[in-house]
Length: 248
Ligand code: NDP
Ligand code: 8X3
Image (cartoon, rainbow, N blue to C red; front, side, top):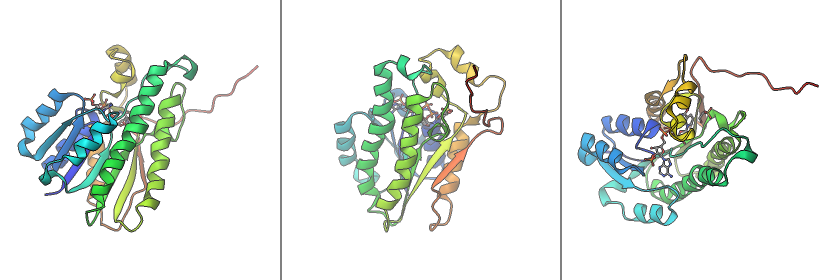
């Protein structure tokens, strides 16, 4: 039985990946802050799930938890480094320092703590996969994206650079960069304002969390010698608008 370590496993992509991989007989280490959500996952898949009720920003907690994993959950060959968030759509100079720090601390620093704690375990495997959750926001800027776009650009470039450091290890690294996808993402971004969140998805077709899980499962099924560096995907309803030109 293979083992996957998934952050942000209480909702959206992380939860969909946990379920999809559990159905494929993986053991799952499911990390998130909301305990009751993780308990529901445990209730569904029983001993296949080992929950870590943790915040990725808790540096000491992350390293301690990984060090103290039960022996039968230590053979991790898949990392889905997914926990992350966007807060607000204000201009950068109107964004609160708290929100700025929260995005940087979660999407960059917490993301790095998890990678740093797990990669030594992946190195013990004959082969392994790392999936980092980037975003189209890491490549294409949009108004109000500022810090969030920057954090996802970090994920993208870090993912590519990490491949150099893992040379010879047979550990693959993929930056998954989705576009519009309906999860709790917008509700978090608008701080619980469901009306504003729903507007994002109004009258259009969006990706689902299950679509992302399916993409990850199909990459996992590829022959061992293929590394997908980056996979960018959007719903067919999404494309680009023009550059903005200021006119006088
Ligand atoms: P959700 O809000 O549905 O899920 C986010 C998950 O991250 C939750 O399980 C949440 O769990 C967890 N999380 C957030 N902060 C922390 C933290 N500090 N410590 C531990 N866990 C945390 O969003 P998505 O599933 O959509 O997002 C997953 C990833 O995909 C994010 O990195 C996001 O930026 C990215 N993404 C999303 C897109 C979209 O349109 N939805 C498109 C492109 C990328 P809990 O609150 O229980 O801790
Ligand atoms: C989430 C996609 O375009 O809302 O990463 O930033 S977007």
